[in-house]
Amino acid sequence: MLFALCPDCHHKWRLHLDRPLPKSGAGSYLPCPVCGCKRAIAHAELPDLAIGHLDCDAFYASIEKRDRPELIDQPVIIGGGHRGVVATCCYIARKFGVRSAMPAFKARELCPDAVFLKSDMKKYQREGYRIRDMMRALTPDIEPLSIDEAFMDLSNATETHDKSAAECLVDLQTTIKREVGITVSVGLSYNKFLAKISSDLNKPFGFSMIGHAEALAFLADKPVRMMWGVGPAMERKLHDDGVTTIGQLQEMDIHALQGRYGSIGKRFFYFSRGEDNRRVEQSTERKSLSSETTFNEDIASLSELSEIATRLISRVASDLGRKEIAGHTVVLKLKSSDFKIRTRNMRLTYPTLREDVILDAALTLLKKEVDGTRYRLLGVGVADLYAADMADPVDLFAGDGATSVEDTASTPTVTEKNPRSVIDLPRPTAEQLRESLTRRYRQHKGKPKQKRFPF
Image 1 (cartoon, rainbow, N blue to C red):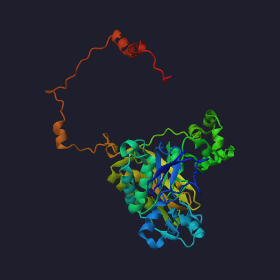
Image 2 (cartoon, rainbow, N blue to C red):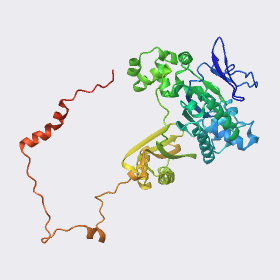
Image 3 (cartoon, one colour):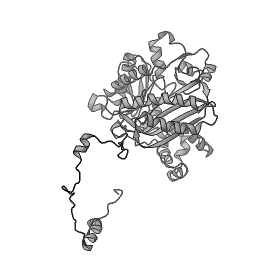
């Protein structure tokens, strides 16, 4: 039996089907028997699934098309410029093979009629925070992944809103489309891993669900790159070992996976079986802060690169001061003319937000990389962030030879008339020393050992 829900008229009904609906493509939705809507959702576990993932569809491009209706039917690419990379593109441009992070010249070759627009991050952030406020109206348990996507834990939706998580998310989809003017896709499941996969299945304006019953079968024939933590390098390593599908990982032992791939092998074992115990974390702590630029022409000169780095660091230091945070590690990023990336970092003695300290570290890193290679991009930033009050401690040994009047007045001086008093402490006896050294042992001697695991 399946539970069905219409997003338009909110009609709810039950139906019996011989087989579950497909997760994507044709037939993944039902027609509503009341209003005729073609996007009704249905699933056997619909009332019980509570972990959602919301992802805005081609967010930057959708915002631009909303503000410029004449671009609705045209391929739109955000970013690029003369030598940059694609930040994002609309779904029309994606039909030509254009993808995010693709070099602009390649995107122009694939889609010569595309409209290239400069990104307007302030506008995108404003709309992203507006959507996030709508999410918070449903639940405080939100874990943003970026400005345009986030996890949501709606386990308490029934108690708070007298609705299931699916109903809340359907309403949210409709509200965002009506008030913000863009579409979002939603994935709903019983954990974060499957919720994120679900949100990608029926883009744009999709709503997909994965339940306990079908998780193993659904994942079995999917490529390993679908799993969180599998990038190009790990995918190549898995392929070299003959592992191309998640189903192959399902057949492997956890110890074999850990022995071959390290700690991430344990994650592969559980993810491949649809298991993920990560909670939706509300923390939104920033991990790094940086600034980068792509050059109009490739640069190999140290003086030119240093000048650009100085401007970028000024911007980074200004942002650190405004946000009242400091960085413990300085990071340098360079991209050569053949698109190879070099990343270097230097751990500082203490966190800092001082421009001169960051500049000195960054230039030290930069000088080691100037070897005749021509670069097309330079980026500088800081990582391992701390609160500003923990930064740049006073150097107690860096005296300038001058003492203020207040310091002189408040510092007691030792004279013959006012000799410094010395307290004469008695030396401890051998018994006292023995008692002191064995105190910790005697305190714990009688206590039973605590078991590590509560078996």
